[in-house]
Figure (tube, rainbow, N blue to C red):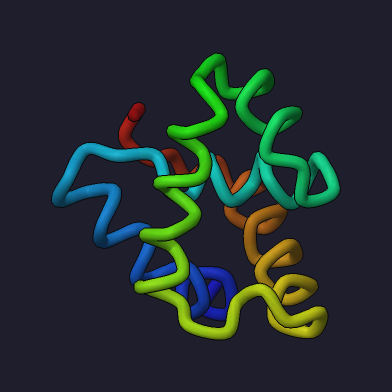
Length: 90
């Protein structure tokens, strides 16, 4: 779990301190093949909300959109999900 926590730590910390849902948003975005529209539908939020959250993720995890980084984050998100780790609802 150190792998997942290490990669997701900035988002987990932000979610905890701001009661947001960056981890859930990133998970939905990657799960839905980088579609803002489908991620928004899965999260029951407006697409602009997803875009704003992705901008915050850009600030917290520079370079996360590269193929290799997003692949690693996808694995970290799956491990986080399987471990039952939960983040605050946003």
